[in-house]
Length: 334
Image (cartoon, rainbow, N blue to C red; front, side, top):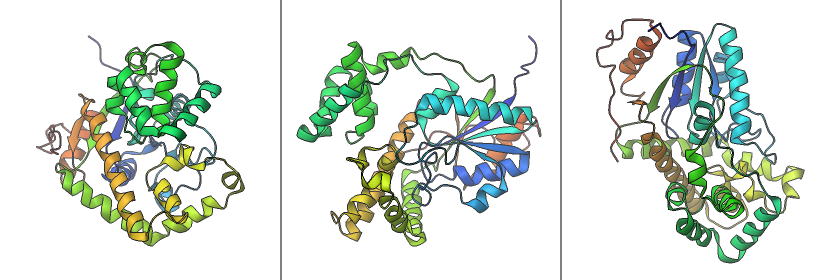
């Protein structure tokens, strides 16, 4: 068999607060790479502190793509992301540089690397009907309905994830077929790349929880609530009938901050709820990552040499055994 001549790319996957962005920048600087963000919050302008968006100084250290593509009231789909990411990757490869895909949005990774199923298009009237049902019965009740018609989807979707519950029920009601069935038939153009998947996470969940708490307190100190006040003052959001239904404002932390500024919670309650929501996000990300059977697991804070060795071995920069322990570090424990 001939050698695989496809361009190579590195995929840095992982839960929130696991160190993906910092390592992506270091890798891009060391290996002449460019970073493609795979994060559904970073596409929105104005979501900076709370979304842990790389700062201007950090973005100046290495080229970044797919950041600040939309206003917070504008839609952006996984299919749009896949097309934009492919275009960005093509440009990076044409420049002779290394594409580094970094983020924690599993749906975006799947859309890009595996393709999406051709499922029914959105139906505005049906979506409005489902939203009206949720206002009466609550999203938990609709999640229970989803569990009856599509247990596989309900197991992946949190009971408070209104956007995904709505879409799953919409697809089922339009087609009579569970969305999980459609997703198993995923198809579409895939980038002609050899991809090394690296799952970045600490081995112990409690260590990640500590990082989440420390980072959120740093966000508060950096002015996160002022950032949300600025968003609330935008004319397009002030007149929106349901701003918290927008995908941008469903990003972890923003909904909790918005409700706090509405007077619904105390400062302590807001902090507790935001950290809890971030931990729940990390739990869902771990569930997705464990399905990536070809990913290799490392803690970038404690296994940097092994992580660098895995990258160098894949790229042929050094002998794969140069760093000794550059083998699979194992899936993190709960």
